[in-house]
Length: 123
Image (cartoon, rainbow, N blue to C red):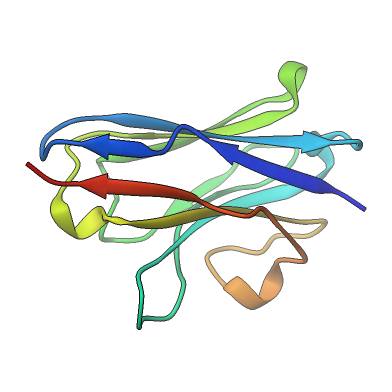
């Protein structure tokens, strides 16, 4: 079973940056497409970004496009998401997820999930 662990969350002021990482074990994450999702209490989980295996094709939600960047580091078996120009509305628990196929930003396409990391954007 693929295990995913997120890190890098925290408290940041509006306009600031954070870098989230998703570490995988015991299998190579390079074989999976990976997505980042976020959820606030009372709302459904929504996709933020995703990256394919192989050609590292990416896709972004319109709410984060131009501010967030997803990338792979296959040597370290991680996928990261750089978040810049953060806004209070980016506050959420962020989850990484993996699928053996192309999942896009659809939550239901992903089989493996991490436990999440809290991101709070506030002054």
